[in-house]
Image (cartoon, rainbow, N blue to C red; front, side, top):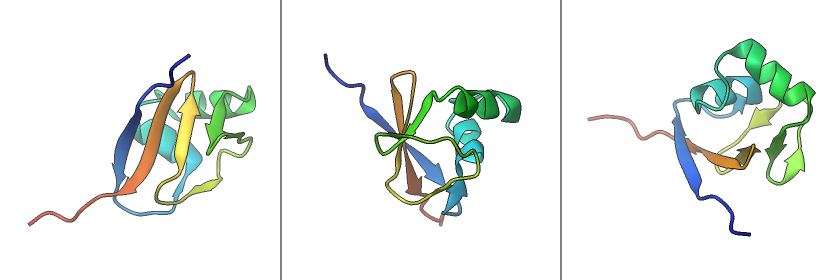
Length: 79
């Protein structure tokens, strides 16, 4: 079984809370959806189930939800 590619998600300020990142990455539609995903243990951070919506993500952390993988990366400042 092949793994899905990792989508980089630029974040203005890291660390970022997991719930906020799920919304920013488009994995969760809103805060309540992010909370539900975490509560039913559908969220992994770096391959481990994460049960804390407020967990801090750092540059390079990979979040997996339903096979979709997204990575927190620092956004580059504009010109």
